[in-house]
Image 1 (tube, rainbow, N blue to C red):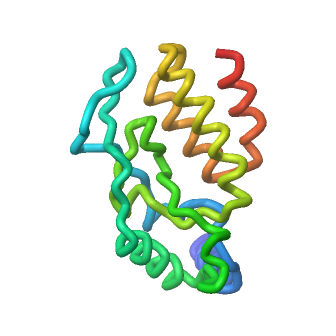
Image 2: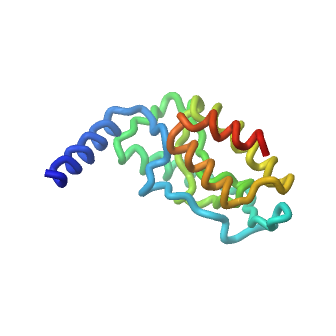
Image 3: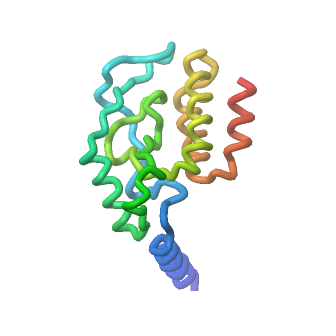
Length: 157
């Protein structure tokens, strides 16, 4: 019975993706997140590897294509409503690889970008570790309901 319920859950999630215009979070098997392995410099007292932004149009198109294959429509005519987001932000040591990129709707970016800036500012001030910030930004990007509590936590640092 447990396996049948799990299968129904998986099937319902697939059909949900097939009817959605855009993902509300990175799809874990497509975008698990990845840290920079070829840094151009190291930042902050913690010496976090930093990769310069380097995502070509072709790479962005690839990211859109694999998410469309998952069933998201990601409107071709409304491309300005999306950005290719670094799941783990560059300022937190994220990579420019497909494993760290996803098509983020601007309505989501409006929430997460402010949290990224706040977290990176706290890392620069030495008040937040990379590991903790990566954990927190993953929490928020996987479930926006945590945006307020993460913002409050970061603001207290």
